[in-house]
Structure formats: structure tokens, C-alpha cells
Image (cartoon, rainbow, N blue to C red; front, side, top):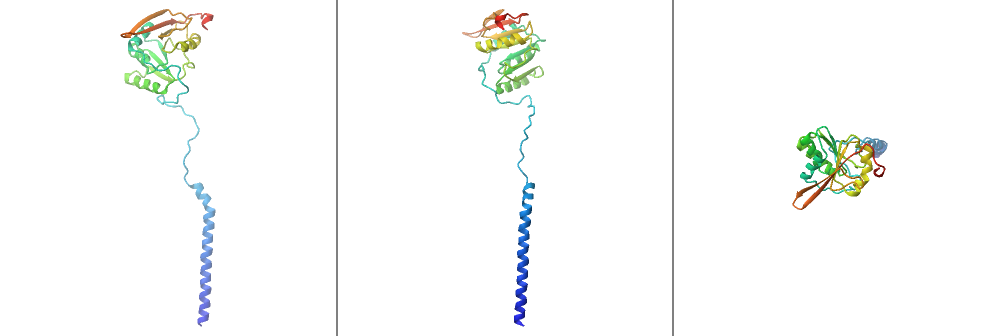
Length: 228
């Protein structure tokens, strides 16, 4: 009797062990089969789609190349004389090439209501100019573009102001004479246009011993061959 009971217990133990083993094996197989699905369903770090969207007007962009001219602020007395020499009025469209902190465009808008565009390659200066225009309350009349001045479309300008360098003026001269309409006024602080003789030259003193020269031209109906 005892022997028979022991046999029955042994059979029962073996059956239970087989069941448990089979159950564990099935569970591992289930996990192995479903693991790829679980991985596929697991949250992944989102990637930024490679689409290009237009940046807001006040966004600071990466500077595309080194500036041709370092930023040196134009004294306010010189700004005033440049606008006077350029005969800037309320119905003019002013472009300031190398506009820095925007003071020429902003001053023209404040004093005369002139619509203006400042162009500078430096993103920080462009952002500063926009902030200065907003503080002055004339953001609706001006804009500041982060661009290479050699690629900017100037065809609608009636006045162009410059504070660049002699070699930059010479490189820019053919573009000015080609794109600007006859009668457009050009005013340059401190540097001339080589063979293109100015119509007026004015000396301004911004502080004791600090002299500035301002040159002005008017785009002619017919451009001489030596200036093209």
C-alpha cells in the first residue's frame, strides 16, 4: 500500500513538473515572439522632419560670411547731414547698405516719415536694429534684412546711403548704376566712388578734431562706359 502510494505521488510530481516546465517554455516563446512587437510599439525619440519653414522676421540667422566692413556707428550729426545732402523726404524709399544698428533708416522714418530698408550681413545687428525701430515706434515704416548687400535688390530705392570702405564702394558702383533708376540719390560717409565724381562734398565735425567727409551723387540717365 505504501509502495503504491509512493508510485502515485511520484507520477503526480512528475506530471506537475512537466506542466510547470511546459508552461515556462511557452511563456518564454511568447515573450520571444512578442518582444519585437513590444519594441516596435515602444515610444521612440521623435526626430525633427527635414522641412524648411520661413523664419519669423525677428529670428537671428547664422551669418553667411565674414562682413566686408566692420561696424562703426555714424555720429548723429553726420546722420543728419547725410539725410540733408540726400534731400530725403517723406515719399522717398531709403536703403542703407551696411545699416549697423539701423540709426540712419530709423532717423529718416522718425523725422520725415520715410520708408526705409536697412541691409546688414550681421544677424545680431539686424536684430538690434529691429528692436531699436520698435522702441522708436516706427516698425511699420522700416524693415531690416540680413543679407549680402551685393545681392540685395535695390531697384525701388530713391535714396541709398553708405558707410563702407573704398574698395567696397568701387565693387558696389556697377550694381548701383545698373539697378538704380536715374535721379536716385546716393550718399556716402567718408569714401568716394573713384572715377565717379561726386556732385557735392561736405565736411562735418562730430567732435573736436574729428572730421567727416560726406559725398553725394545722382544716378545719371546715361551711365558713362568707364563707370559700368
